[in-house]
Amino acid sequence: MLNREVVELLNEQINKELYSAYLYLDMADYYVDQSLNGFENWFYVQAQEERDHAMLFRQYLLNNDEKVTLSTIQAPAQQYDVYEAPLVAALKHEQMVTASINNIYAVAYKDKDFRTMQFLDWFVKEQGEEEKNTTDLIKKYELFGSDPKGLYMLNQELAARIYAPPSLVI
Ligand code: FEO
Image 1: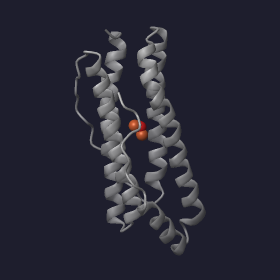
Image 2: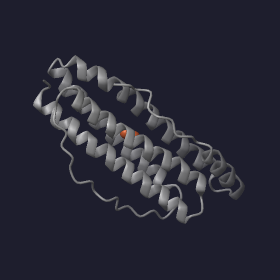
Image 3: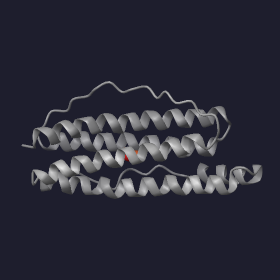
């Protein structure tokens, strides 16, 4: 049996991951409007990964005979005025998710819940990768995005991103 606070936080994390999927889908749709299909693809893949993350948290709770409690997913309410805006908002969002994962880890650590810590290790690493990928994308955009040819090439590069299921098996 897991610590009650850990269970509550893991359930909240399902919601946060599903919200992340929603948010990235909304960003993908913004780029559809802008006719930037590569940026759309990058965020669509991101949304799929976030859904996977939610399912991993769900499965971990079920594997530990804990109840899954689903709650309302907030609608993304952001408006984007420039192409770079979703990239910057995505990085800020990932930093918030990292803080949330770290908080669950801290509570699990306090409770000597080594099983949950081990489960979360994958997410700690994943958050590092997600923050880096988004930061790299912002840097690329800032370098090349203001030039139409550069933007075209970057869009092509992002169109090649392929969805891969998570490496974590639980
Ligand atoms: Fe599942 Fe991007 O955090």
